[in-house]
Image (cartoon, rainbow, N blue to C red; front, side, top):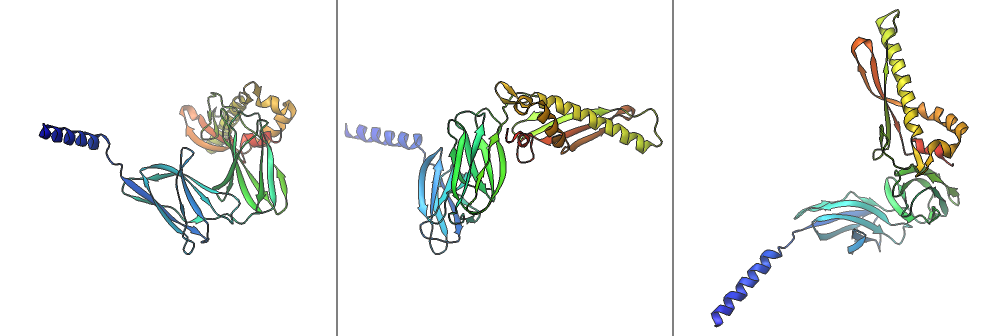
Length: 305
């Protein structure tokens, strides 16, 4: 009976090894500048810490091995007021992902950025970016309020996300000991033709007819183009009238009709002609594009309403 036992054990071991193949590891390495004692690199996945490693205090270098996958990196330092976040770092099997040099945030400051995110849902997140890199983030309160304190003087970007609303951002400059209040109202996502919510753009088409009489073909075409732009602007207005700032509140209702008209005049002047096409009979078709969100977007014309 003993040979039978040996054979069974061998088969069981072979099945176990086949069912659980070893996942090849890769690695992440980089350098933090300036080098400093106590700097740590935390590797996160789905909000949970996978591992962490301390940066070499002399040269700022670090390296850590990881299974293949996508990770978020957080860098913390005793001298820096906020952790630095690097999302979406991909590790491939048997390869080393080399990160760009990581610059630590300046030492803690004395400024404060605060405000309220209006008409949003639970789970609203406000992130603070410096030089395009996330330095801190908070979840807004049930009333939409947020605050960042101990901010060094400089220029920052606020990025706001909320379920059911379009992501938005705003630029802020702040000096030492200053307290800046920045309220924002997000745009509610609804299916509207001409709006790309993910790209934060509005686009509308217009067609212009050539005049029956014109001194030259060039003037005739230019007049047709002007008519096309005017048609596209009217279509832009129709699109904007459909935009909500909440499940049951239109953009025009948030501002009031008089303010709505005044602010849209300035906003519409910022269009660019995305496409221009000659059609049969001398007609011209144009497509106008405007930013929907961001510092120059339609949402900025809502502030502080």
